[in-house]
Image (cartoon, rainbow, N blue to C red):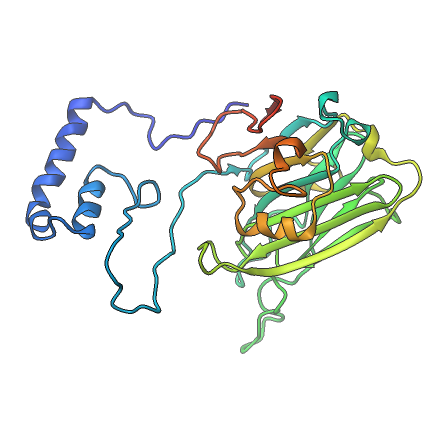
Length: 327
């Protein structure tokens, strides 16, 4: 499937584009003259060309602030993500190149960001109550299961909203889905419209660790971890993880339907990433993290940004060996 990101399907002549820009400058001349030489004037001039502050921001340096205790360090950042509101899915190889010297030539950590659809207090719930987020061809599956009660608790006048109407269980099935199959699970408000960072760690002979986190603000200066939960699953015997050859994000696996929401920053690591490093990733998802200082180039075996760095084509971004993924 080929995805195209475009504001319009119609081609506009270059001469018409120039006329539009000149017209905007002409109508804004009084304000541009009044604010000449200031940050506001420069911002207005840039805006006449249709460039928003999320793409090109203006920073001003020098002088003492009028209020020394107040500093404006907030910044909006423009990027893309893969919108999986239909039947979109992603497939990648799970067996690593032997040059990475990974344990059993498989990733030890899978990390990604997701933004499930928003469940409002007046809605009936998500598109599907059970959605498959991630799976391996060997059976290991990660699902998002909505168990809350959306909307009011009863139809009578004065009814209150269920305080956990946006909560759901993120469940990891190491041995595959099924009644009575063991799981690791975290319970958080995944349907609140925020971005969530998810990490699955696997250590052979020990088991799995499932972690999910989100931050309270998209602004770097004021962001902090708002929600966090972790669960572990011990497994010492035969493990389907080391036998997997392909991974999938989003495709339905009965009884789970396809994932509905946004996906970004899919990463495979050859080492076990710590909780502290994962918290850093949650606060700054475009950063390269690893188990130590400057260790990411030797541990990050695969990365699909999925728009976070304004790349919208099917390419893998990592420092050592090229990879591939399919949408």
